[in-house]
Image (tube, rainbow, N blue to C red; front, top):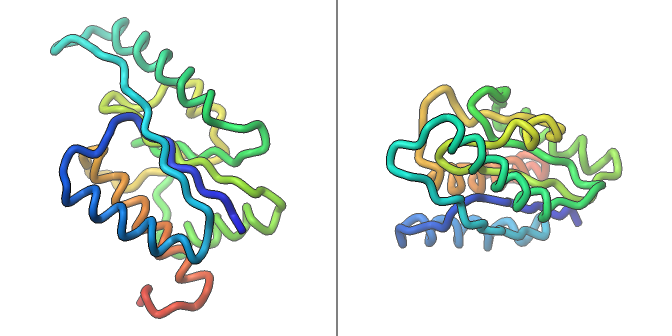
Length: 160
């Protein structure tokens, strides 16, 4: 069974987002072993400068890298990533599994994104959309798309 790790900066604050995540985590249990790791984002002043942001992202990268094993396939969620259809994501996950990869790590950065070193290490850079979403909502969207991807692979009726 495939291992899926979602490594994200920050905690879900809203109960409705936690409930949505819990529902998709429960559903995904039939298809994979899923873990969600919430890391604490670096504290920044209200109006940080570029140097402060870069320093914070570098510190967050250290925390992210500590959660990743060498053989994992790393997927960085970032605005400059490729946009995939649900079918394409399903195919990509299946391709990893067939190639012998047992763990896929999906990384959701803080509100300032991800350090370039994390993006460079990624096997895939994935963009959810050209639109901007709150990072907490991105987690729900990712879980839903993972569930949809597994349903597509198993010819389930969820995806129409």
